[in-house]
Image 1 (tube, rainbow, N blue to C red):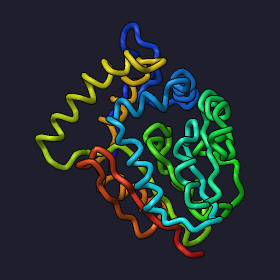
Image 2 (image 1 turned 30 degrees about the vertical axis):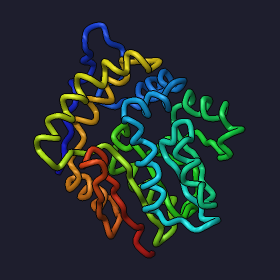
Image 3 (image 1 turned 90 degrees about the horizontal axis):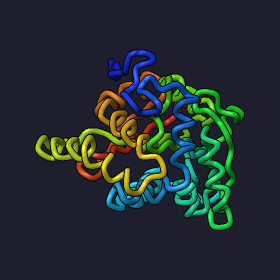
Length: 249
């Protein structure tokens, strides 16, 4: 079973103030507060605009009907939530970074979705409240991944769907080496020029490198109570969509 490589408790790189891979929730939230102002534009630059395609493919995998209730967890400023609502779904943006929520609410005139503050491990929603739940590029920042996956299952109706859009491991070895070099060297360099908190992107690069490959994450999802678990690689495996269903009661 996957056991991510973590820093020792309290260990930090000299002169750098950011959340460690230990993933203390208050530190991660504060880190995202610091990048909220330019978060969306930074992601588009760092992904070479692939983030838009990844959001679109996530929505397509859900196959939501008009009126379906979907929870967008770790929604940030809500740009992913707007995409989920494109076909008429009732999408709710939820995040534990108040800075992200404030940035999203400032754009609410353009993003007509509700914003709710909430922790993935203690969701502020009743049982079976949603037809589906999505978490995009946020699961690796959760302190207790199985607990969060069980909490997601709690708020989804029986037969409801889960989609995890997350950075993963490129499948072609030469491309993987090129990608890891970009991740650990070029990404922080670019982030210093476009982000409002470039140190945070060093943590993000490290968290991506420490994240499990596709098959190991699928096993974690299955062990957390979801069924029909499968995944689909995007952009050569840089990102993977993991899909699952909540079993019938």
